[in-house]
Length: 166
Image (cartoon, rainbow, N blue to C red):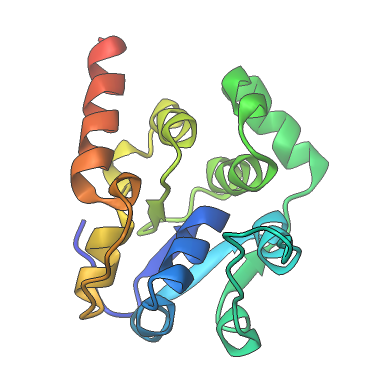
């Protein structure tokens, strides 16, 4: 699946924070159509400003991210499909539950958490996963991102998961 301009990209909290930390969020938001779960948007807005690594996201960027409501029934249904879902952070769980229920076509899911990537694979989304590095590159950026936001890391996690589940 190629990364076309205005492509829907479903993101979790860490992707948005890393994109903001590396100053590529604005370019990515201008190139892609970001969507997420309502819980993720709340996590982004409620960040702990007292933490040393706190990343402030400007209001204009937040307004460009579409948030989808994830009711408790949607979470419960996803947990029945993949019990391991309950071990994820609330934002990751809500996002994957939304995707499992709605199964929107043509989406790309970007995550930098090993457990979330593995659950996404269990839900059948392994071909939709993309690294922040790839998304930023398509938006004309080359940020200095951490390793777990790179294509190589994501490919290794997906490959190991698939090999473990042959």
